[in-house]
Image 1 (cartoon, rainbow, N blue to C red):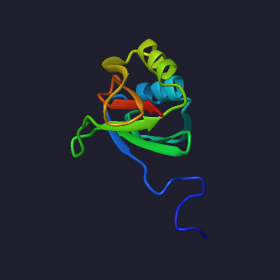
Image 2: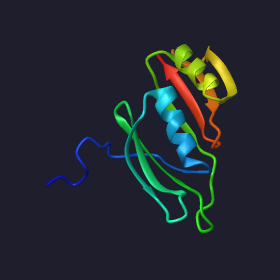
Image 3: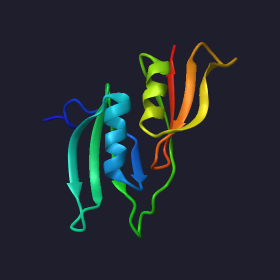
Length: 125
């Protein structure tokens, strides 16, 4: 028996969001995310979900009184920054930063914010 689930990374970001269903759809459309598990509360709001993106897993739940929604920033390497950026805009994301190369390295990097308030920094070398 392993100390963690098979095919899960050792670390996964956990997003406390405002609209879990919308965030799941966004991750599927923009990053090719695959929903692994989903558990709803009795009122229909998202209690917990897990979405695989490439070799990582993003966990999430909708905010509640004890754990309000909190904006987050996630850095994600993708094969093609420009096409991913365009898919994100088409899916309703807000532009934070157009893709560009900066003096800090060779990465082409851009930023978009999804409807739940998470800023995604997408990059390729």
